[in-house]
Amino acid sequence: MMLLTEDLFIPNISVPLFIEYKSVAKREGLVANLAPQEVDAILDYYLSKSKIHKIYYLWRPLLKDPKDDLVLEVAVTSESRCIITFNKKDFKGCEKFGISAVTPYEYMTERGLL
Image 1 (cartoon, rainbow, N blue to C red):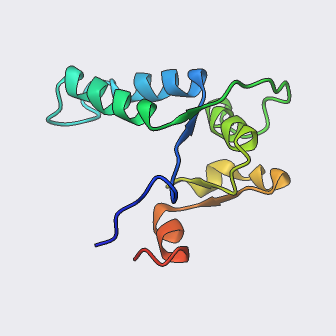
Image 2 (image 1 turned 30 degrees about the vertical axis):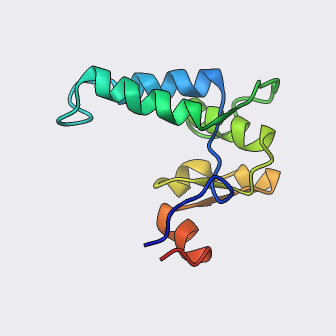
């Protein structure tokens, strides 16, 4: 088993994107068997390991779903090479910024982690 190190994967986030994550994670019935306090603990841990970016772009909307633009903005600001997602089709257009949308499996396979 290979562990992900901080050098391999650094989460990037903005305040608006974190608020969206928190809103989604706390939807009724979305995360089974976790109390709200446990969801908060997971989100707090994620935030503690993330690099927080301020967003200054005014080019929205670019993607089909404006909430996906929150992810793209952070990817552009953080100079990320990819967005890891299960919904690659939602990020059509991110290649304009030199960013590719990849599944978690593709990301791990490309780096020899699987």
